[in-house]
Length: 179
Image (cartoon, rainbow, N blue to C red; front, side):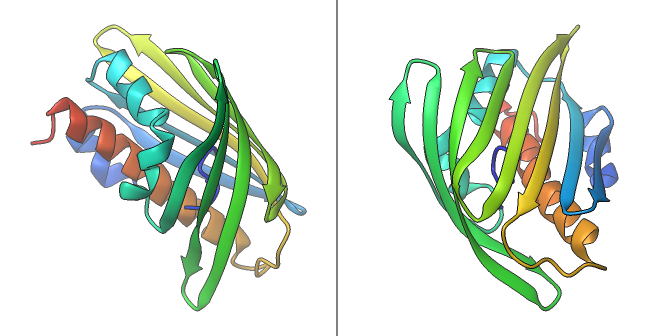
């Protein structure tokens, strides 16, 4: 995921969004593949602003303690993030530096260039669908630390659910659409 640190039952939030909201996670060997999607009645520009608000992500993404832009060159950004992953008795501090490519109002892709992942690639895609904006996330993660084999998929899904839900809720909050 773009936000690998925090990079999260979304169905109950779906009613407040006016559209479906879902997260899927699969575990294939050492690789975790995740997908998330939600529809929101918000302006596309606002959704883009929240997704790319790297310096403020730790204010609304669960368990993210810091997110800051280290360097920006046009639509290429380097972002450093720290935080914790927690699940039951499992807890681990995480650090990751991401190289991010932006295609304004359409896509944000990232890949880990250092930190606690052997591989971390993700993308957020924004699509205008009538009055609705659909936010999709796809990620591929290979942690460079022990993840309990029987709990791995559940841990990753829970983290991604929390992150994605927080992202969607922040977009809605900033739009003034929260009821």
